[in-house]
Amino acid sequence: MPVRPASNVVLRTLASVSVSVLLAAACNQAKDDAQAREFSSAKKREPARVLVQPLERREMVRRLETTTRVESESQVQVFPRAAGVVVELLVEEGQSVAADEVLARLDDRDVRLRLEDARSSLNEARANGPKLSLATRESQARVESAQSAVAQAERDHERNVALSKGGPDAPGLVSGRDLDTSLATRDRARADLGAALLAFERAKVEEQNGEHAVARAEVAVARLELELSFTSIRAPVAGVVAERSIKLGDTVSNAAAAFTLTDLSRLRAVFYRPQREFEMFVGALGSSGDSALRAEATLTATAEALPGKRFVGQIQRVAPTIDPASGNFRVTARLESELRPGVAGLLPGMLVRLEIITERRPNALVAPKRALKREGDRSTLQLVVNGVAKTVEVSEGFSDDAWVEVSARRGEALEAGALVIVVGNRDLEDGAEVLPTDATGAAAPDASK
Image (cartoon, rainbow, N blue to C red; front, side, top):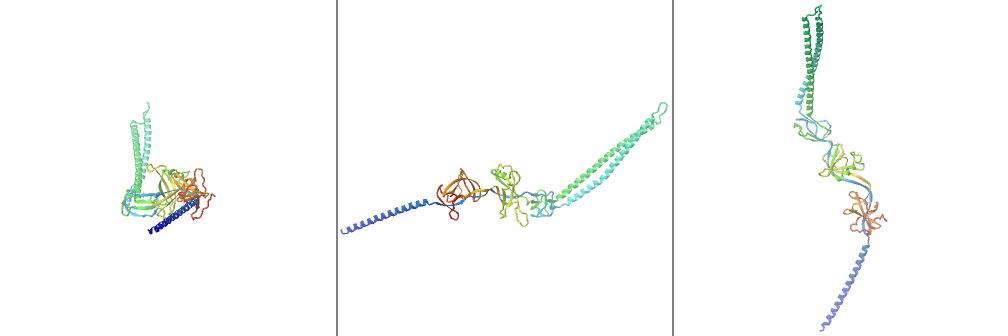
């Protein structure tokens, strides 16, 4: 029984301590909540720190890029014009040759012998010409003599006829026998004239045949001289030997190419572009329509095989048709390359990357690309105006890796120097207070103030 009062005291003491602890915890929780609300309120009132860059004025270009292979405007395969055995090679791959230069020779002994025979026939035909001409002149002389004889015989016969006619009191002075003799003489003279005329015609025909024989012999000689020239394989154009496909002793014909020549001074690049760019390329050629880009447009080529080198190009032709299968059109550009000993330049077959600039805008207003926000077809920028964020809808123009040309829409205005937010605008609401800083972390001056 004496233990019970002590237990009650302990219980009452524990109860009072528990209440005190609970009251202290509740007070501390309330204090913490008040501090959190105060901190949150202060945080909301603090301006957001954002990274900004000013809008700038700089040149912007419309640039297109594509890859293709270099071609030579004049690359030809040289085929032998005659069949034969290769007896001499005069050039090797990589060697420059002039137009009509001999590249190789074939065995020409048979052709030369036949040519000599044809020339002998020609000389014989030409030597026979004076004899035939002389025979023609002799026949002509005989014709003239026969004509004179006929004329004399006719006069003699007419005189005898007149003398043979006597009057009734005077007998004829020429007998009938003499009259018949003069008539026979006249007829014989006429026959001789006819024979002389036939001989003259025959002589003229033989002379003409002699002239034809000379012409045929000249043609035969010319044909064999041409055939002899075919035993020398010549370069049809000036260039560089890109490939030699024959060896000494080979029997060749016109069925396979012996050499391939290329002109390294006239290089081109052929590439294809989608039809939506057709007007752009036609406009780049200028209003005159000549094969040259406008002054503000350029074309350059680079090759992995020639690092650090850039080669200037020029659009030459734009095909006036669209390929119905691919929807593309063909563009041909000329490329300038160095042609100096010991200096590497573009070569046919080399892969190049082409950069075509079709239009330049030297004073375009540009914004950093990372400042642009796109939602569907809508593009916007957030500017810092009087310390607050302002959203401006813009239209995009030319762009490069870091900048994009912009112009305000819906009556807004953009000027160079205006600060545009590049970092920190992801969840930033329009009208929110901001603290603009530049790339160094220093506060950026607000040009709108």
